[in-house]
Image 1 (cartoon, rainbow, N blue to C red):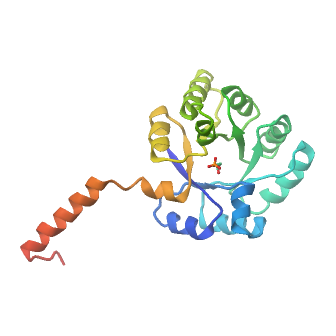
Image 2 (image 1 turned 60 degrees about the horizontal axis):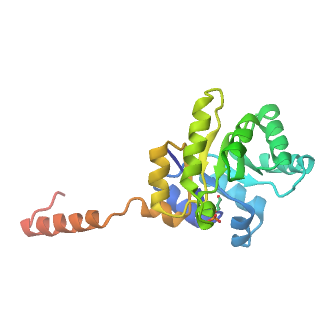
Image 3 (image 1 turned 180 degrees about the vertical axis):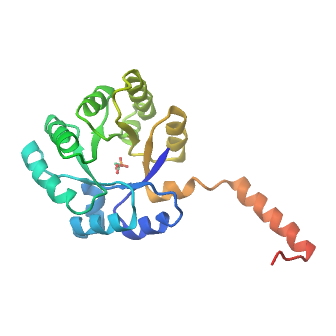
Length: 219
Ligand code: G3P
């Protein structure tokens, strides 16, 4: 499973990229607004730090203007993936960007398996179902991932990757991996939590204490 980092904070991205565990980055207008910085400048910097796909979202709502914005974003760097919302205009733009331009498209704000099927038919490279926001309203976010996985697996010709988004906890990562999602995009803090376990810390401390008692040194 690929790990993307869900932020526009260049320092956080650079820090995590150094671990070798960052396969891409996703941004959206809210994450960019949090930085207080110029959108195109931030995307350009992120594309320098991460080799993988960097999702940059259009802000227009009509297909024609989405395509004009997508042209600007695509020119920032070859690894920019254009993010469009799951609307009919977004699907129209997705089809042009993916099939005519040959550029990657991340279709976002997905909340149903039928939306995900439409995105795949439109040539989306990635579909972004928002699991956390479904959980927030008492629905089953991971259940949506299971449904999309089942639908896509019924039609091998569809090659859209399931990119789990709005992930809030390590359990979202575990469940996504068990279901077989292709990608999960994580806030920096959640990605960092993946390596941690109290028994690992406790066991390492015990190893080091016992080693210290030997008085030996490897170097
Ligand atoms: O990639 C989408 C993600 O940023 C949304 O997360 O926590 O606002 O639902 P959240």
